Amino acid sequence: MPRLSQNAKAVLEQTMRQSMRDAVYELLSEKELNAISIADVAKKLNVSSVTVYNYYPSRRLLVDDAINESRKKMMEKLLCSSRNVESAEDKLMALAKVICDDFEQHRFLFMARFAVVPQDDENAASAREYFKVIIDCFASAIDEGIKNGDFRMLNSKYAAMSLLGALMSFNRHAAFNWIDLSVQERLSEVKNIIINGFKIRN
Image 1 (tube, helix red, strand yellow):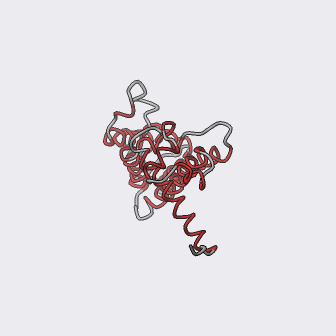
Image 2: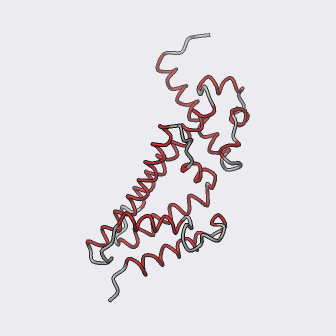
Image 3: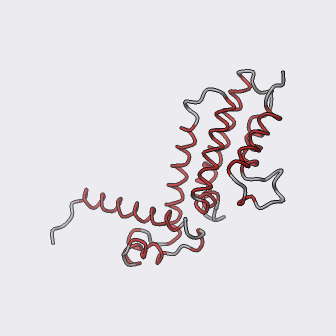
């Protein structure tokens, strides 16, 4: 059997690793992060567990790699979501819609992006960066609204936290099971905050 060149080996490794990360994403549509095993990934790809371990020596390394990649893709999506939107209010709503839709389509993956193993510094840094990008995207749109005279003067980072809290129901809906809220209920809460808390009344 002919030997693979270094370049071919690198391509194979990249392809296999991506397939394994994709398998984690597929499994996250069926079960929670902690319930996913190397055996599950192997079964999904129709390979042996040994094959998976050849590329990822531990379950934690595979899961972290998949989640970190997912965070990066979501951050890119958030950064692009409001580029061609004119008003600050519409930008905020566009960002909120991206987050809501992502939760509806990938609930366990959505939650996994915020999950951190306390002693895992690299994963914690990735989760912090992800959270920071979400807040910064909201804060940037709020600052734009203040600059344009549409929003009153306020602390944009604190206001951004209020919007994220509304999306994840840390405030008014805290007594309810936020997982069961509809996209429209979440977006209505965001709209409420923008109109009643941010906009300058004539």
